[in-house]
Length: 301
Image (cartoon, rainbow, N blue to C red; front, side):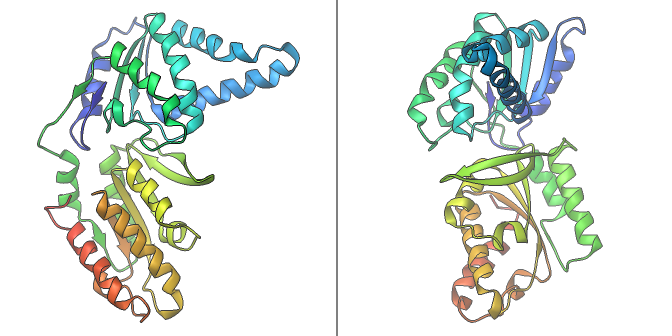
C-alpha cells in the first residue's frame, strides 16, 4: 500500500513493478474506480438473476472466485473510497482475495487510517482498514519533489481571455497532470445528493457552469477539495451585479480549495482582479482575488 502526496511518483513505481512481472503470470492493473464499477455491475447482474435463483449472498464470493482465477496480482491505482456502498463491499471482497493468496498492490494519496474519513457509517468501514494494515505493507512515499508541480510551473495555471488557445492550454495541462490517463466519471455523495465529476489520476475537471451555476454550497465544494488534489475550472466569465449568486459560489469554491491546499488551474475571461464588477460582494471578493493570485504562485500549495 503505497501512499504519499501528489506527484511523488507512486503510479510510476507501481507501473515499473507491474511491467517487470512475467508475462505468464495472471496480472491486472486497473484504476480503482473502474474496478468498483465492475464490482457493482456484477452484483447488479447477479441480483437480477437471483430474483429467481435466490442466491443474493453468493454474489461477492462468486465474484471473488472469478477475480482470483483471472489475476494472481492486482494493481490498483488511485485507491480511495467515497461511497458508503463501496465501503460496505470492500471488506468482504478483499478478505476473499487475501485468503486466496492474491497479491494486492495499491497507490493512494491517503494512508489507510484516512480512507473514507468523515464518511457515512464509517465505523463499519474500520475493520477493512485494519485488514489492509494487517495484510499489506504500508509504505509512505515522502519524496520532497513534486513532479506534477514542475509540470504546472512550465505550463501556467491561469489562462485568459477565453479563447480556443485557452481551451487548448487547459487540455494540455490536464494531459500533462494525468499522463493521458483515461477520464472517467465519479459521483461524490453529499447529504444524499450526487455530484458527478470528470476525473483522472486525482485531477478533477469542471466548467464554471457545473460548479457555480448550480445550487451547490460549501459542503459540495469541501467534498471536492477532500477528494481531489488538483481542480481544473474552465470558462469562468466576468461576473456583474446580476450574477452575484454565482460570484458567491465561486468565493465559496475558492475558499474550500485554498483551505485544503488543492491546486487550481483556471481559464477565465479576465484576470482575477477584474472577474467581479458587482457591489454586493465587492469587499469579500477581494479575498478571492488574493487567493487566486496566491494559488498561481510557486510557493503554493
